[in-house]
Every structure is written in structure tokens, then in C-alpha cells.
Length: 293
Ligand code: FES
Image (cartoon, rainbow, N blue to C red; front, side, top):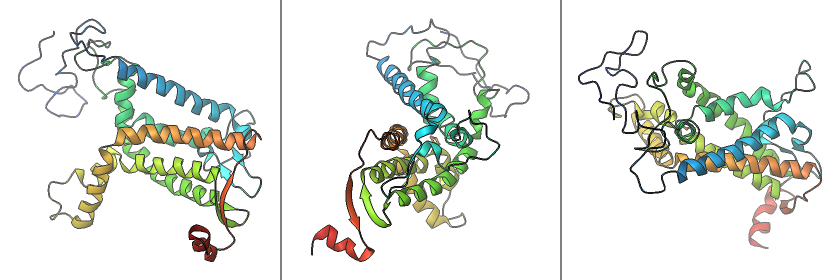
């Protein structure tokens, strides 16, 4: 194992003076052969299952975004379903026919996920072997310098992708309300639930974001000394509770978005009949329909 430099390290020129040079303190796995470890448990299982999940779900998302523009929405039988990959739907006249409109909007959700603290951990471990797990030999070279240089310095844009994600949530919730408007009435169908599940889990994923938690109150030492301290503390408490399960929301939301797209796509292709579960001729019918006359 490499020995660590002792004493305070000086950050290289041009990097934040944190007092510790990026890469100065490395774990047990650094300097050992890739995959070498004394661990006897199934440390490889989690990175392997993460890699499989990411390949399948991101592979599907790419296929839907690049090649699936023919069935991005379902506008029949009084339904208004739009695939979350294509929302908001933008199709300017200058867009070439071969380019999917999804690519105009996906850069924001994609950037949000790619720079997410949890996904970074997942793909650094699963794809970069950096390291695969704690106390396991890692792949990178000694020249590695953290996320302080291109291209990994882009990870620092996460907070700005969060702002975009919050705007997208407003648009996606509008799509949810449209999906519950069936043949001019309030109603519930299979597609309404699929789109609600997608946007609901995306909301939980976004509101459990580490950057949001930091913005609301994570950076404060004293709530009662800060402006709007009480509401900020309450919001921070809720976000902190969600944040404990950020990994779960990351996976559920990714799965739910793919399922919602697949549902809309299958309806649009005529391969799936969208069942109507409830309809209300007017809002006054809602109690009667739910609880009987
Ligand atoms: S840290 Fe995962 S979305 Fe912000």
C-alpha cells in the first residue's frame, strides 16, 4: 500500500485551496492490483447489479429518445399521454427530420442524473472500477486528481441541473393532470397511473437531492440566526428524510420513467388497450363514484 504524505498538503495551482490536494489521501485499494482484496464477502455483487441496471435502463432510454419518436404520445380515446422523455414536446421547424425532438430536452434530465452524487458513486464503481468497492484494488492511475479537471470538473454543475430539474417537474406535473383528464372529464386510466408513478418518483428523487438539501439549510450552522430560519428548518427536515433514501428514489424514478414511456408507446402502437378505471362526469360525481350513492 502506498504511504500517504503527512502534514498539510498544498493544493496544486488553480485548484481550490482546501488544505488537502485532491488524491492526497487514498484508500487501501489504491496502488494495488485491480480487483485485489482480502475481502471474502460478495463485494462484486452490488457493482455488478448496478452496472446491469444502468445498462438496461439507460439503454432503453437512449433507444426511446433516439429512435422512438414515432410513438412518443397517445392521443386517442379521449386520452392525452406524453412520454416523459419527450416532455416538454419541442419540435421547431429547423429541426432535421432525422433528429429526435427528445434530444432537445433530454440534456437537462440527463445532466441532472449524470452529475448526481449517487449515480457518480454507482458508475465510478461499476464502470470505472474506481474502486469497485471499499478495500478493493482500483483501476485508475496515480495521476488522478479528483473531479478538479476536465471532464470530471463538469460534475460541479449539478446544482444548475437541479434548477432545470425543478422547472421540468412543473411541466411533468402538468402532463400528469392532462393524463387524468379523459374524454373531457376527470378520470383514472392505466396510463394516468403510469405517468403519475413516473412523475411522483421523479419528484421524490429531485426533492431528496443532496444539492437541494445543502441549498435549503445544509450550509447553515444556525437556523434561528438565518432569514426565514423556521420554515427553512422544516423544509430541510423533510428533504433530509427523503435524502436518506436518495439511492432508492434514483432507481425507482429511472425505472418508472422507462415504464411510463413503454406504456405510452405500447398504447400508441395499438399493442396495449388502456383500461379506464374510473371516470367522473363532473367533480360533483367524485364522492358518489368513490364511496357509492
Ligand atoms: S445528488 Fe442525486 S440528484 Fe442531486
